[in-house]
Figure (tube, rainbow, N blue to C red):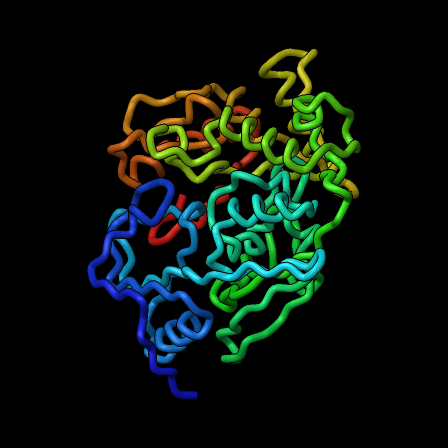
Length: 359
C-alpha cells in the first residue's frame, strides 16, 4: 500500500531529543517529526517501514533513556489530542497528557484512575507499561486499545484480554516493533463522587481510613499528588529529584523457593529478626520492594557524588542533577544492580525503555 501524503506539523533534522525526555538526556535524532492526528502518525510509521528507516516513538518522554549518540532514524512525537466521555466510557487519544486526563475524570465524578494522578507521560504509553501506582493499574479499567498494526498495515482494536496485561507488562511491550497505540478506551465508575475502594495502605493511612474504603474523588487525587511530590515523583523543572523516569526498577516477583532463598540472604545480612517486604503476586509468587532492596544494599537517598545520583527523596529514582550524560546515569544504574545482586541475589530489571544503550 503506498504511503499517504504527509504534511507534518513540524519536521526537524539533527534535532535534540534530550528536551523531550524527563531525564533531559540523550543525543539528537537524524529526523524529528511531530504528528497531531492519527492519520499523520500512521503515515510517518508507514513511510519508515517502507523505507527501512529506524523509528522511535515519543510520547511524554517519561519512560525513555536515550543514548548519548542519539538516534539514527526518524523520531516521531505523538501529539494527538482527544478526550471523549460517554457516560462512564472514556476514550483518550495517545498524545493526551495523562495527568491532565486523570484530573478531568475526577472533575467529571468518575472513579477508577484517580490514584494514577501525577504520573508523567502520555495516555498512549499507559497500556504499554500497564502503568500502575497506589493500588491502581490501567489494566483494571482499559476496555480496548486502538492501534496501528505495522505487521498487517491496518488499524486494529484489541480487547483488554488481547492486550495480555501483567505487572508492568503487556502485549505491546513484549512485541514493541509491532503496534503503535493510537487511542485508549476505559470503563470508569460513577460512585457518586467517591473514589474506587482504596487498595494501597499508604494512601488509606494518609486519608485516615482503612484499605477498601472509598473517599471523595478529589481527596484521593490530591493525597496521591502529595505523596508523589514528597518522593520527587511529580515533575518540577526546578527540582532535580524529578529529572528522572520515576521508578527506575520494577519490583521483583519471586517464586516461593526463590523468595525463601532471598529471606535467608536477608537474615544473613541484616539479622534474624528482619523480614523483607512481601506482597502476594499470584499463586506461588511473591512481590518484594525494589526500593527496599536498593536501600538495604547500601544505596540510600542521595547516593552518588557525580552528576547522576539517587534521588534525595526516593531510592527508586535515579536522577540527572543537571549536567549528567546518559552514560553517567547508566553507570549508576549498573552499580545499583550489581550491589543489590551481591547483597541479596536478586537482579533488578529497569523499567524505562532504553534506546541505543543497555544495562
